[in-house]
Image (tube, rainbow, N blue to C red; front, side, top):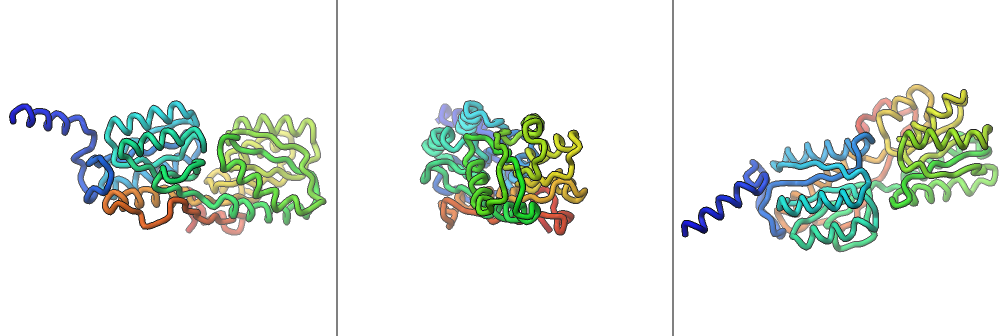
Length: 318
């Protein structure tokens, strides 16, 4: 009896956050922990920082302790953090993953350990492993931006495209969405297309190179706001700040650029709300064993132009 009591006390001491305040009755998962682990790409991108901040705030408001990790789109690092979540006997994982294919095994590993995962922003190429996959309706949103771009271009002229990370499903969906609109107009010709891996510095470098080969481009479509900022920096340095640039995400940086009359539009992904939804669904699942919703959920995007940019803040609109 004495040995059993000592063992129980030792386990309680080493289970992180097991006695945090709040929360509710444990659902069907194996853990009795009150810890939610949040894993996203790097916080140098304000989109991912917003996800982490809002997920963490919502989790704490619901009575959970949190641990926040950054995988920097490194699948091996992501796997290590999921191993830590398993070791910590987390109640749930909220994750913006590092790749549609490379993440599957890690999420399956967490599931096998009794830890449910709730994916945000990026899907994986599998169903039945994560409890929820909550993503912005990238195709719907990028088409709104594409239609506005066509209008600004007057349905004619050369343009360039900066594409996101090739391993990210969203990069392909957004590019396809743009082209399903733009390719209907024979007067619009794509002069160049290159990947900038969602990165602002890389986007500026790629845009510098594109401008050397195509100095007369009239517009630039970008798969996210960070690349749009890089493209605009390159264009302004070359004295071509009047080139039409559009992005996608809804960042404060691009909001300010739109208000200043530089970048022309973006598509708002409601990152803050998506992150909160993931935590709310985790909480419900842990209490009841079900979210009551389908695994895959699409959240519509909103076109942001100079008309409504002042209402945008931290990936949400008033």
